[in-house]
Length: 349
Ligand code: H2U
Ligand code: ZN
Image (cartoon, rainbow, N blue to C red; front, side, top):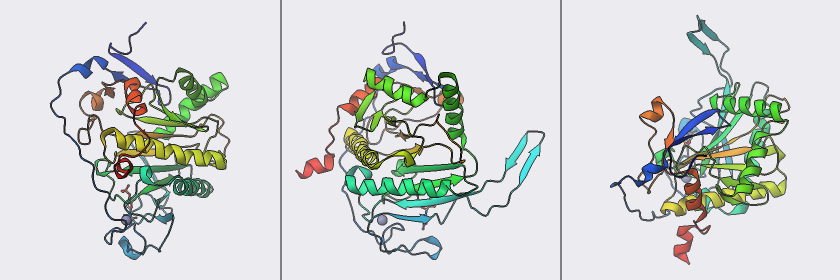
């Protein structure tokens, strides 16, 4: 037997096939860096200098329409372009390069510059879910597209260039590294067990309940057993679907609802607008059946102890493997203990 609460150990991530080091005994070490936080004011609903606000000019001369709900546009500084000419380089398998075509878009969640997912209404978040589904469907239908990555960078700490609520979509002609790892592991599991890896995982976690943070009829949010980031969350569809396209109206509403609940718990943890990168993993858009693929979203937030003390991925983590001190179970317990009323809302009441 192994004492997961006290002794150093490694945990296996069946989705990536990689290991992570857990050192729970280190949480007892002295720490002097704690910084107290105060709630930041919400700010302007319209910022004349914001390139995502309705009616404003963007780089390159385009102007946003006076949109009243969601708004999608092609990224003016796209990392990938649809018109890239094909080309390849291979020098003895050592200098290898390949051209890559793609499409990059930006999705504004709301015309209100001051909002965040945590403070948007569920009906408005439902509209965002429908936009994501439509974008996935449209981009997947483009013949050269194989992968559609929807992701949100929230907060300066995560490199977001603008607080206006928005996300990005990068779609390209080959599977990026993380998708490729998850494709390989999910397929291998399906071939071996004739069941879906994440269907089995979510039902195991729902039995154990130790790492579950919150749930509704269609989704479960949990700190995965193999979490790397202190308050990492894996959001899983409870029912098998390879992509957002498999969600019915109820499930889409449940997704909107749980997005709000997760981000509210995050904000309440350190009473700050919690930074994170989140994104959906869905089946490759290659026109094939993928019964092994299970829709999920990863939340990777950097904060560790307070609004300003973050986890660094340095040293051993860059050279060996990722490592964490607080266990996934204790992180889940702390997130479970948070209320689902946003702290800014609570102050108003
Ligand atoms: P991030 O905050 O996650 O960086 O997303 C903002 C995106 O908006 C970024 O990818 C794009 C940037 O290229 N952008 C435009 O498309 N037009 C602009 O006028 C400014 C920024
Ligand atoms: Zn704005």
